Length: 563
Image (cartoon, rainbow, N blue to C red; front, side, top):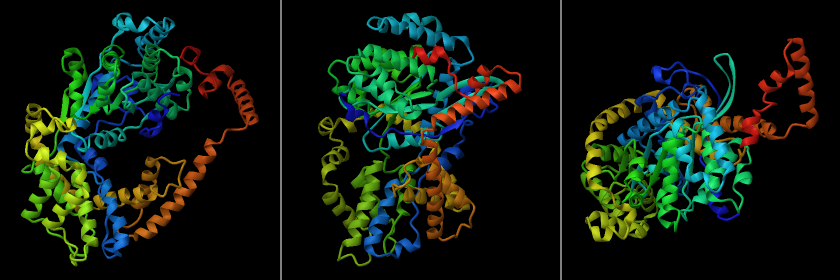
């Protein structure tokens, strides 16, 4: 299949859970199963607790041999520090999902009317995409959309994935308000824009992502080679509506610039999703993605109806940068602790320019250089070590960093990924400034708490054990949950080797159980279970059909055969 490699990228996967309906604090969110099944609206403390990833480097690690510490240092790559912009993105995402469901209440008759209308449109495959807006106009349910634009390496993708994983990805509904309600809800779906900007490949990536989640075969059914792109778009729209997708996240949107003919069509499709079908979209891209919206006000307005978040590097004199660097600096694994002097601060910023991923890599590589430098017996991170690391180990990105350092706009145009809208940045910076002091205080309080220390252990231990690659049937979330259970039930000073051994044993058992579940049940057992259910139904004086339907042996014929 064309561009199959594009679709084999790892797709972000979250949890699947049974619906647990919660009392809503806002009236407009009540009596809507899709909203009531979501987690409660997160507080800032919730985001702080769930977002942070601080790898644990123990005193024992610091005393290890150099070859061991070299490996320990790689833990720092997992470091994620909550910053003011993360809270901003979380609030926007939370609102986007819930308000997108307001006009798509599955209890409302327009929900099924929309699905029926989309099915009728698909019957006229070649022409229907031209008048989809007109046909659905009377039941339209406009949703907001959000664009996140920023330089490469600033942490956009890491942040949005971390925030999405705070929500279950798939929710199974069976009974709502004491009435049968058999429905599968996909809360979020994240896919990458194909490198060639092809709309056809994007549709196929969508079908494959849904198949991977639900075990369906939509890619095989709707994505074969001779399919017209407009037809695939209609199927994609239908599935997004039928499964109640809360938000569709498209990453690497700048790849649309590589498209020969599809740019306009794909952007129009995003507009249709939010304008007509009511599916909120989040478009994420590097700064060059801004070119996509130049000259087309409709697209620019719809791509950012809930505002565009322009994500820039941290400035040297900001509390945000100071806080980030001080937290990162705690993750040393050298003989002696290197002090964060004014000279070291200045040199560190000079060599990373406040770009998150560059800062983390510089910190790791500088420690590696100090470890193996025969002239640096104390293994200290000095100004000299930082400059040598930047010039020798990070040589490939120096032209880009030099362009930023010297505000060389002519050079910046060579590297479009680092171009940003300075006016927007000033507005964002002013709006977010009040969060910095509050966040810093909250973090300092947590660092002294048992809960914070437990969180550190859970994060580092789950990553370390997950990296073994022997638990094929478990998701990363399964591993994290098991780690939490073990860590939270033992004293905080429990030896980590004991915790690791206990965790691996439990995960082996969990993995075996999951493997058994995935094995196809014998046909005879299915027949016997049907017979048993029939007998039970007759005893209860109920019709067997209702019992079979309740136990998922009978699907809705409208949905099953019209999709």
